[in-house]
Length: 400
Ligand SMILES: *Cc1c(COP(=O)(O)O)cnc(C)c1O
Image (cartoon, rainbow, N blue to C red; front, side, top):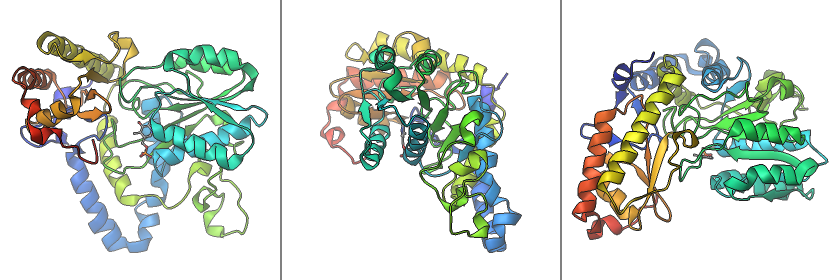
């Protein structure tokens, strides 16, 4: 069992803040401060360029990948970190399409996070091979898989909808996609660190995700990519950077992909960001994912009950059934932006997604029942007294 009172002490949260936005940017692990400082001082400062070998910087993308691998059910040696999630979408999709050269359709859904769809569009445009992207409603994906049948090249889905927290039944969708011979890319942006994931057991082909949300790697922390071992030595990297080369320091003229997952590396890894992520993963190494899910569901249910009892103007936007949700709860409210600003002013931090969604992430590592009750109490006070209607809460900032 994981002791969530103990994990809470491993995070640095400002006094008076209830942080319900770890689904967007996880908080600072206390140990990350010293880890990054030591990396600067003892490694970069003292070792200079020898840090690549002496401090193991060059091996970190694989080592961190394996630790994330445990959380997503990936075998050691099949996950690597680097770049941003947008880049990993492109990389996975380009390789997946090469595995199905004669098929035209990439199937996603219209609730997918825009960058995933933008990256797919950009790739399709430069490939110019008559590929097309279909984005039905999330509920219609299963039916479209069968209808498209043997023209389906790739099913590319984000498991948890970033607005509503609605969760796809990935195991069933992967089976359906494989039944028609398609390749599956599973975006775990809102899954990794949110609940148990099993890329091996569900037989996913590719999985990608970011590390700055539930994994708490810090702003700009590198993304990760998993490639099923059966594909890893067959795929051709579209982003054929030198660090994915079989022998980067041979400086050959021609590209020759490295073994297995190494070929998904592109360029120089972000050493300082990896130091912060390393400290965050020290916490994850101790976490039992099943226990985390049980506690996450309990917190989400408590919040829904509390808000529905006290705030009649808010409408639940997330599925009511816990098994259909990720680890976030969303409510709709016409003046959601202003209400969220009023909440933040009183120390309860969630976020807003246009046009009217107030999002709240629940992560048992540092959120407990008392935090949920405090959030409900402050939210109901703001709603009852219409505090959100002050002019200062209506001005929109660039990042919502
Ligand atoms: C957060 C998120 C991203 C962000 O991509 P970056 O390249 O890291 O900025 C991409 N896709 C999904 C599904 C996300 O939730």
